Length: 256
Ligand SMILES: [Ca+2]
Ligand SMILES: [Ca+2]
Ligand SMILES: [Ca+2]
Image 1: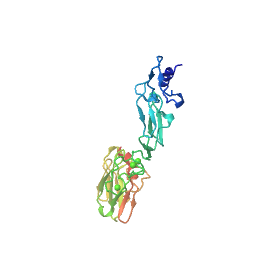
Image 2: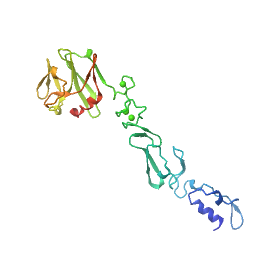
Image 3: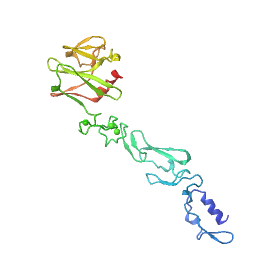
Image 4: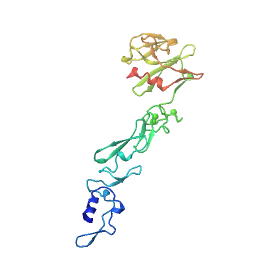
C-alpha cells in the first residue's frame, strides 16, 4: 500500500490518526512531487461521507453528528436527563420525569410546571404563570383563602374559586350567634343542574329541588347524602375563616 493510499483510507476512517501514522514530511506522488499533507482531523469535514458540520454540545462534547461521533454512548446529556438515540448517529436529551430543563441542565420540578423547585412560588401545584396577586411570595395557587369575619353577615355571600378543572362556587355567612358557615353552592344530588342555592331567612334553599336547610347546620360534613350544601373543611380563627386551595380543588367535581 502506497503512502497516498494510506492517506486516502484515513480520510474515510472518520477518526483522527495517531501521530505515528502520519508521514513525517507529506506525501509524494509517483513522479516524486510532494503533495499537501491530508488534514489530521478529516472526520469533521462537512459534506464528506454524510457528515454534518462539527459541533460542540452544551456539555462541551465535540465532534460531528451523522456518523456516530456524538451518540448516547458518549453520555452527552446532563444529570437527571434521558438520552434518546436518533437516526444517523444523532441524539436527543430530555430531562427525566420530575425534572425540567433543556436536557443538559435539568432541575428538580416536582409539579412539572417548568419552574424549578427552588424558584417556584408554589412547589406542589403546577402554576406556570407564577401569579402572586398579593405579592407575599407565595403563588396564588398555594395561597390560603382568608375570609375576614368582619366581612361576613347573616346574608350569604357567594364566591368563586378557579380550580384546575372547573370554577368552584361556594358561599359563606354567619348564623344568628355569629358563627361562620361555609359550603359548596351545590349538593350531591342536584349538582348536575348547576342551579345552586338561595337564601330564605335563616334557611338556604336548593334552587333545583326546593329542599331547605337551616343555616345553623350548614358547613358540616354530609354523611347521609341528600341535598345538603357540599362540605368544605375550614379553619376558624378569632378573626377569619381560612380555606385551603386543596379543599376547593376537591369540590371541583360538582362543577365539571
Ligand atoms: Ca415547579
Ligand atoms: Ca408550581
Ligand atoms: Ca400570594
